[in-house]
Image 1: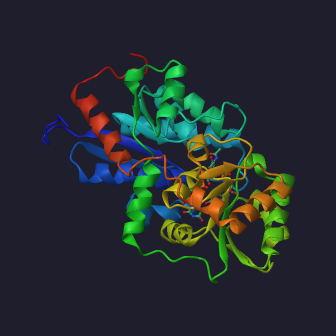
Image 2 (image 1 turned 90 degrees about the horizontal axis):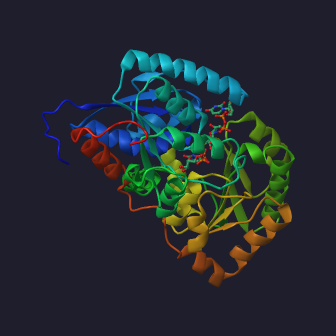
Length: 380
Ligand code: UD1
Ligand code: UDP
């Protein structure tokens, strides 16, 4: 980096509101806090209340400004309106040099939009993911495309994500391939080594998470029935940390509660989740972040969605996109559990999402550009 240690630090406002944003911005916040180039101002929106605050302390992130926007069963339009209004006010008071947002949540979109209105440049971490289907996942595909129109720095986790952005007309000088910060954090947390696995028996271990809005309702109930059939094999233990969304609980609890072979648990903190993932044999998930973490630990992942913005894992052979049909779920999981050669191939496919140094690359680029006084408009 070319800035001198005595230079005035760049005031970077990190806006985060949900569990995955806390996990994926933590490495950026930690690195900014130890160096001299940046003054990190962490704003938590509280889009998630319990699931966000469960993470912050143990990931070494302290929030300077904490909003409290969450409402039970919040509607996207109300949530977005509240977030833009409250973040606009924070920005007018704080006047940061830049705003950093991550991913594709409502918090990330509102953070970018409020920054645009206040004429503060935006850095987008985990930029360029696309399924190409504007309402799947809903509303994240639209959110990330809109953030892509606003951001000045686009930190893409993979070359493919970078290509999506340049294909959409983002100047290539503003797109940087960094790897995904989720890997930085996973390695950091596993090195701590203090988490406890949620598995209790020596059976074949399946870790499941489900929460996506487009899967809620009958589709999620069907997936619950598929899990019940899998548990009926008698040789598996399924651990499912239940998302706090009432819609998820309404779909899954009636299908799975009290069933042999299935442990429904409260959301795990990241140390325990990482330990549980490290101990499982197989992952079934509709999560974004877990599609990235599973291949890093050599865990085959069956993705319970019809699209993915992370095809790199599927192409590497580490994950399969199997959709949401209960019949297919039971069959695909059964194949992996019963075919050791297939299992070994998937488990050994490797991780295409980075080397654990993504946050350093983000910081180095931002420091270089602020030191060089580059133009800060989104279109140079
Ligand atoms: C959000 C993100 C999604 C991300 C997911 C991570 C959007 C549009 N969606 O979806 O991209 O994958 O977070 O988990 O931003 N709730 C609580 N306590 C909590 C968290 C949630 O009670 O700590 C309940 C509330 O009733 C809330 C509901 O869950 O209204 C839904 O939360 P919300 O953030 O709107 O959507 P998610 O489905 O969690
Ligand atoms: N996670 C966790 N505890 C849990 C479930 C998930 O810490 O009980 C972590 C997981 O390791 C991943 C992130 O939460 O990094 C994924 O969050 P989620 O699935 O809620 O959102 P998405 O990644 O789909 O946006």
